[in-house]
Length: 108
Image (tube, rainbow, N blue to C red; front, top):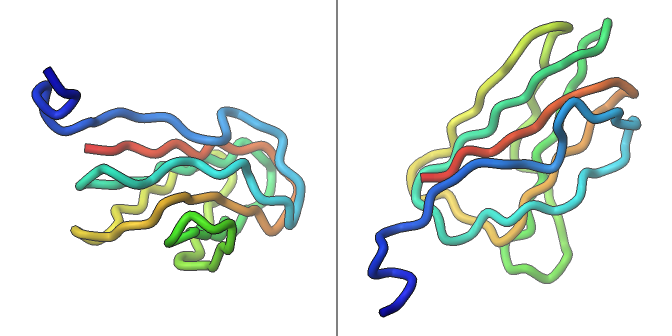
Protein backbone atom coordinates (compact mmCIF):
# COMPACT_ATOMS: atom_id res chain seq x y z
CA UNK A 1 0.00 0.00 0.00
CA UNK A 2 1.36 3.43 -0.92
CA UNK A 3 0.75 6.81 0.61
CA UNK A 4 -1.26 7.82 -2.48
CA UNK A 5 -3.73 4.99 -1.90
CA UNK A 6 -5.11 7.11 0.97
CA UNK A 7 -5.81 10.02 -1.41
CA UNK A 8 -4.16 13.39 -1.95
CA UNK A 9 -2.54 15.00 1.10
CA UNK A 10 -4.23 17.91 2.85
CA UNK A 11 -3.58 19.84 6.04
CA UNK A 12 -2.72 23.12 7.66
CA UNK A 13 0.07 24.73 9.62
CA UNK A 14 2.64 27.41 9.28
CA UNK A 15 5.75 29.15 10.47
CA UNK A 16 4.12 31.71 12.83
CA UNK A 17 1.48 31.23 15.53
CA UNK A 18 1.04 34.42 17.58
CA UNK A 19 4.79 34.82 17.08
CA UNK A 20 6.90 37.90 17.77
CA UNK A 21 8.34 38.88 14.36
CA UNK A 22 11.19 41.24 13.52
CA UNK A 23 11.27 43.56 10.53
CA UNK A 24 13.09 42.01 7.57
CA UNK A 25 13.70 38.63 9.25
CA UNK A 26 12.17 35.77 7.21
CA UNK A 27 10.24 32.97 8.84
CA UNK A 28 11.50 29.43 8.66
CA UNK A 29 10.73 27.90 5.24
CA UNK A 30 7.48 25.95 5.08
CA UNK A 31 6.85 23.09 2.64
CA UNK A 32 4.52 23.98 -0.24
CA UNK A 33 4.97 21.19 -2.77
CA UNK A 34 2.58 18.27 -3.32
CA UNK A 35 -0.72 20.07 -2.74
CA UNK A 36 -3.29 21.23 -5.28
CA UNK A 37 -5.06 24.04 -3.39
CA UNK A 38 -3.11 26.54 -1.29
CA UNK A 39 -4.36 29.36 0.94
CA UNK A 40 -2.53 31.62 3.42
CA UNK A 41 -4.15 33.18 6.50
CA UNK A 42 -2.31 36.08 8.15
CA UNK A 43 -3.32 37.62 11.49
CA UNK A 44 -1.88 40.81 12.99
CA UNK A 45 -1.82 41.01 16.79
CA UNK A 46 0.14 44.30 16.71
CA UNK A 47 -1.01 47.89 17.21
CA UNK A 48 0.21 48.96 13.75
CA UNK A 49 -0.25 47.56 10.23
CA UNK A 50 2.15 44.84 9.06
CA UNK A 51 3.05 44.36 5.43
CA UNK A 52 3.92 40.71 4.86
CA UNK A 53 5.90 39.60 1.84
CA UNK A 54 5.40 36.02 0.66
CA UNK A 55 8.59 34.55 -0.77
CA UNK A 56 8.97 31.23 -2.57
CA UNK A 57 11.82 28.90 -3.42
CA UNK A 58 10.58 27.34 -6.64
CA UNK A 59 13.27 24.67 -7.09
CA UNK A 60 14.24 23.92 -3.49
CA UNK A 61 17.74 25.39 -3.85
CA UNK A 62 17.44 27.99 -1.08
CA UNK A 63 16.90 30.94 -3.41
CA UNK A 64 13.75 32.84 -2.44
CA UNK A 65 11.92 35.51 -4.42
CA UNK A 66 8.91 37.66 -3.54
CA UNK A 67 5.56 36.71 -5.13
CA UNK A 68 2.96 38.59 -3.04
CA UNK A 69 2.84 41.52 -0.62
CA UNK A 70 -0.12 41.70 1.75
CA UNK A 71 -0.93 44.40 4.30
CA UNK A 72 -2.72 43.27 7.46
CA UNK A 73 -4.31 45.92 9.65
CA UNK A 74 -4.09 45.70 13.47
CA UNK A 75 -6.40 43.05 14.90
CA UNK A 76 -7.33 41.80 11.44
CA UNK A 77 -7.04 38.55 9.49
CA UNK A 78 -6.16 38.60 5.80
CA UNK A 79 -6.43 35.57 3.55
CA UNK A 80 -4.81 34.93 0.21
CA UNK A 81 -5.78 32.08 -2.12
CA UNK A 82 -3.01 31.06 -4.49
CA UNK A 83 -4.02 30.55 -8.11
CA UNK A 84 -4.89 26.98 -9.15
CA UNK A 85 -1.73 25.20 -10.23
CA UNK A 86 0.56 27.58 -8.30
CA UNK A 87 3.55 25.59 -7.16
CA UNK A 88 6.82 26.04 -5.29
CA UNK A 89 8.98 23.81 -3.15
CA UNK A 90 9.24 26.12 -0.13
CA UNK A 91 7.49 29.27 1.07
CA UNK A 92 8.36 31.78 3.78
CA UNK A 93 6.98 35.11 4.99
CA UNK A 94 8.71 38.35 5.98
CA UNK A 95 7.24 41.30 7.89
CA UNK A 96 8.21 44.89 7.16
CA UNK A 97 7.93 45.84 10.86
CA UNK A 98 8.32 44.39 14.32
CA UNK A 99 5.11 42.94 15.72
CA UNK A 100 3.22 39.79 16.60
CA UNK A 101 1.59 37.75 13.86
CA UNK A 102 0.31 34.36 12.73
CA UNK A 103 0.93 32.93 9.25
CA UNK A 104 -0.87 29.65 8.59
CA UNK A 105 -1.25 27.75 5.34
CA UNK A 106 -4.20 25.53 4.41
CA UNK A 107 -3.44 22.92 1.77
CA UNK A 108 -5.94 20.69 -0.05
